[in-house]
Image (cartoon, rainbow, N blue to C red; front, top):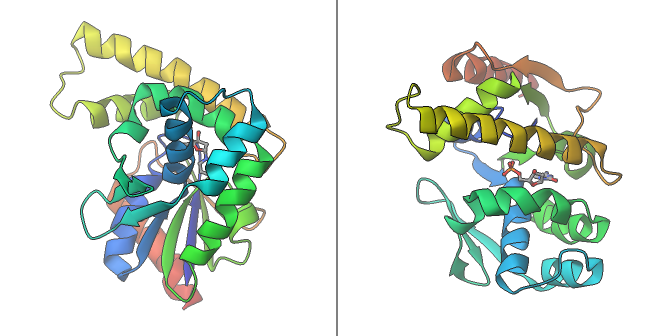
Length: 225
Ligand code: DC
């Protein structure tokens, strides 16, 4: 079975996919982590991000692997652990540019499909229900109010932060700007833009608990089974 979860940055895809994968004993495929890894390696190696061939070259030669036995799962680029590096604001800022190159998407598409080969998975990203797995058994398009998404991102980075702290409030504002910019780029690109599949179930996570959303998706999966 394939459960596809698409949606914009910070909509809760990753958290929901983790809980679902655990509940069903499925493997989670975080496709955003793959694009992030390509972006990080390009920056690390000083590759000019305007040079499409060079960026696509990195995507084609890179071996991206996951260790899903740990929590959170660890991500490796040619065997090097890049789990932390791919989540920095610097990588956030460049990943949309890298992921807009059709050649990069093509390079990662076959890895993503191979990952699902004869396994049950929960896959999360932007184009899972539309391009990667158009025949997924369950398709969800998860959204949330942009300010709430920015707030969640900042609290993920600083789990003990006090939201009344002016520095934290300022970081939420900056994250909101970055996030809306990234959504606009992801939704407006030519290749596999962020958009709901026609048969996706839309879920707004702004005011819902994780448990409510997971229960809803679990019911959809049970029906399909
Ligand atoms: O889910 P995320 O925020 O980690 O994704 C990082 C970026 O990767 C996102 O801004 C767009 C890109 N991405 C994509 O183009 N297609 C996917 N299936 C997943 C992510």
